[in-house]
Length: 304
Image 1 (tube, rainbow, N blue to C red):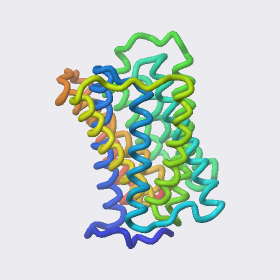
Image 2 (tube, rainbow, N blue to C red):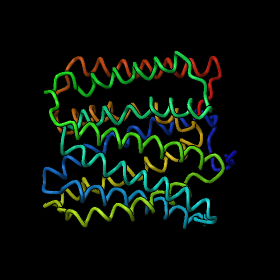
Image 3 (tube, rainbow, N blue to C red):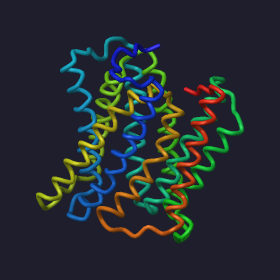
């Protein structure tokens, strides 16, 4: 098991993992608001994707350099970084492409099915046993998210390409989450993150062959860019440490909080009006996670 000497907290490792998961969800929830502000001022998806993924990679790299933590030490480390990095780049590009074909709310909804797919993958691998309460918890969280994202009031999607691409991106998320979970069991989470995101950042530059980035037009937009990059870099740092403490499945389940914070920040910062059923969906998601946490504590379920 990975050494927990890096923990400086009065909390237990699991409690600290939950704290990191919720804090990261808040930070990830800020990012879409920043992205939308940049898009509204002339920036495009290529620009934001490259800037954000390099911010995450350089943030982790800088930490490793300052803390004198060596990277890419063995052939196996390099192989795992390539797998995780390719899947990270593929999922990011997949999300961007899926947004061309269908609304962002539906893209997010398809992506959030990765927890269910990860659970079935772990069952297939023989690493966990499927229990009814965990399955019910995930389905309830997905139902709640469908209300938060208001997908039941959207027009039907005629082009199935978007659904297929988003589903492929969700599959890539499953693979990289599983790889991250395995890597952080034995190695420093920041080193794992730096290796994977450096590979992903380099691969992502290939999108420049197909389309050029468009920069925003005002200083205010660059402030939004900086906010988005700082938020996603900090959240990514927390993600790798959180996965090492909670395991990939539990972390992926708590990532269902991200769209809730996105909806709330959209209402607060850009004055979007949330409907009553969206608040009801938030309550369902939070309740399902509380039930899962209570169940996990009472029966000592451990799904990594």
